[in-house]
Image (cartoon, rainbow over the protein chains, first blue to last red):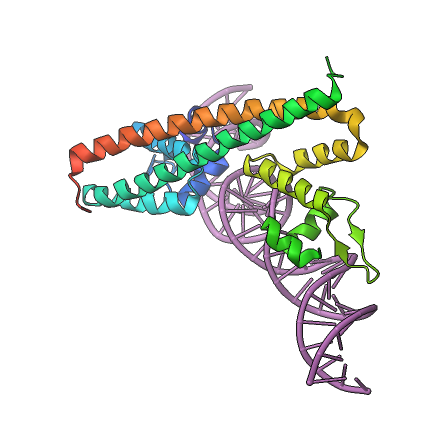
Length: 121
Length: 121
DNA sequence: TATTGACTTAGAGCCAACTCTAAATGATAT
DNA sequence: ATATCATTTAGAGTTGGCTCTAAGTCAATA
C-alpha cells in the first residue's frame, strides 16, 4: 500500500511517516517502479508498535535506539528486553502518580462541593 | 520569601516562575520596597497545585483558564468543578491506556523470553 | 566608593515532535 | 497532449513549554 493508505490505517499523517523514516524509526521501506513507498504488512505492524510506545510516552530518542536494535536482528533481543523492562517500570510509576492525581482531584472536588454548592446543576 | 527561595521549595526555576506569571498562571504577587517578588504561603500552595495539574498533563492553556476562574473568586467554583471533572475523566482514560501499555510490554517480553533466551543475564 | 550579587525586564533561543512548503517527477484522465 | 493528482525531496516553519541573555537597578559589603 502507498503512503496515504498507510497513513490512514495507522492514523498518522504522511508527513509524520516520512519524518519517522528520516530520523530512523522506520527503515527499508520498499519502493515501486516510480520510487513511491510501498508499505508492507510487517511495516504496518512495526509502525503500530511504535505508536504504542509513543502512547506510553517513550521518547523518540529511545524509540530510535530500540529501532536500531530491532534492525540488527535477533542477537539484540536481550538488550531490547532490558529497554522494555525499564519502560515498564517507568509506566508503573507513572500510573501510580496519575492515580494519586485522581485522588487529589477528588479531594478538591469534595471541597468545592462543600463551599460552593453546585451552581452548574 | 523571594523568588529563589520560592523556586527551591516548589522545585521549578526562577525563570519558570516568572514565565508562569507572564502567561497569567500566577497573579498578584506582592513586591517589596525594591520591587522584588515576595511569595506568600497561599502563592506557594497555588503553585504546588499547578504543579500537580501539570504532573497529570493538564495543558498550560487549560491551567490558565482555571487560574482565571480562580482569580475571579468563589462564584466560579461551579465552573472549576466542571473542569476538574473533565480532567479526572481524561486521567482515568489515560490510566487505562497506560495499564494496557504495561500488558503490551508484558506480552512482548514473554515473546522475547521464548525466542531469545536471556543474553543479558 | 567600588564591586558583588540577587533581582528586574523584554525579548531571543532552544528542544521535541511534528507540519508544511516549494519545486520536481511521473502516472492517469480528458 | 495537456491537465490533474499523488508522490518525491530538502529544508523551513510551528507549537508548547520552557530557558537563557542583555542591560539595568538596588542593597549590602570590603
